[in-house]
Amino acid sequence: MEINLVLLRNSIDSILTMLTDNYGAIIEIDNTLYWNVPDDELVNIEAKPSHLDLGDLDYEYELIRSRFESDFLIPVDLQDISALLRMIAIEHPAFSKKH
Image (cartoon, rainbow, N blue to C red; front, side, top):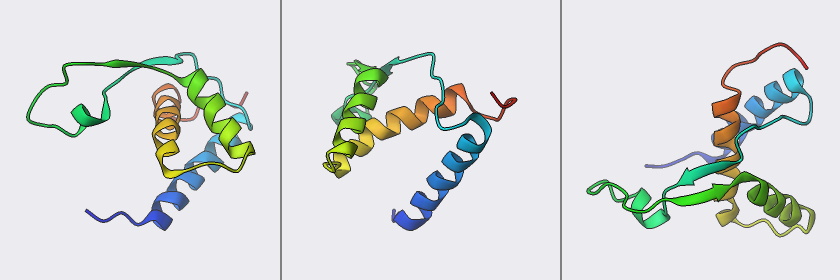
């Protein structure tokens, strides 16, 4: 599978722009803890995951914020960013009234 990174970036930017226009620059997330499947088990479709890790969005957000401010983001940070984006999508799947 090939992924067009420009398409992906533009799609994410478009959705985040819509969310920002609807909610403002800050969005509330109620659930900050979540179940996470470890990387080696995530891609093994031959077996059900036998171990779940606990993810913490507060920690991940602060890590991303700190690395961004230090200009030290690297591709592996996409894992933390994807967890944040996933929870935004779960808690805000469609637009509600403006806050």
